[in-house]
Amino acid sequence: MSAIRNELEYINRTAAENPLDFVAASEMRFKNIISSIAERSLKARGHKLILLAGPSASGKTTTAGKIAEALGKGGVDTFRISMDDYYLPAEKLPLQADGSRDYESIHALDIPLLRDNLRELMETGCADLPIFNFKTGKREPGRRICLDEEDMIVLEGLHAINPLLSEGLGWTGERVTKIYISVSSRIYGPRQEIICTKRAMRLARRILRDAQFRNAPAEETLSMWESVTKGEDHYLTPCKPNADLLINSVHIYEPCVFRDKVLPLVDAVSRDHPAYQEAAKLAKGLRRFLPLDSALVPKDSLLREFLGEL
Image (tube, rainbow, N blue to C red; front, side, top):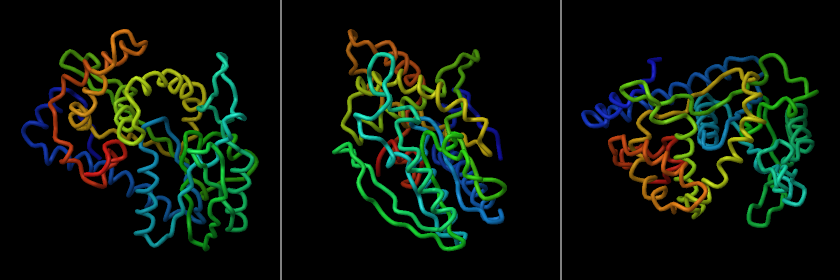
């Protein structure tokens, strides 16, 4: 697999001279990653479970779907489970030092129930799963799933590879694959200065997604971002070494596509807002990229998780 060219000059030159091939090459890189994961799982004896973890805006939901689709093409039915369906009611969430609720903690989830459901699925093949209603803030009865002998499960969520989830369940050998996904490439300028950090790339994704799907202004996303990243450092990063595989979800053309989508959102942040400096820093980086039309992004691209449909 070819190395990712993460230099600003290369990105802008290629976006200007050959945008279609630029997009296609980045999409093919990610497609090949998904194919290799599916092939690995299909070859493993008695493989049942893929655990997909990663920080906010890393593309977990789309990646879980793509892995399930690739396994399906290999003849294996795959059930997707989201850890979001195991959130505790707000009044039972752990508290942070300032008294606010800690949504980033693994203890914000009903881990005993999730462990029981996974144990049932691995041992008996069937389990009754909940669904979390984000409008009411409560869990509700969801679906019952039953696995045939060759079926698999993809579990995705922030804490999917945290040892607390699998402790004592005896998941050994080839039955389980643990994956950590995130943006793992910075973008550098001509003097090797960092134009866009890994977290800045995810922040741009999150601002766009929140605006598109949650009608949330950039101020709201930016206000939460410090808490989100502190949670990542405390709860996620220490678990990264547990992963069997690492996925870099960057699509190196994405700053070009996000540029004209995200800039109006962050430019609207007022100067007296506490997150103004963060917004201005992100905007400064994005302005250095040549814009690309979002219509060039394929409808099945991971970036559609943030851009929405064509």
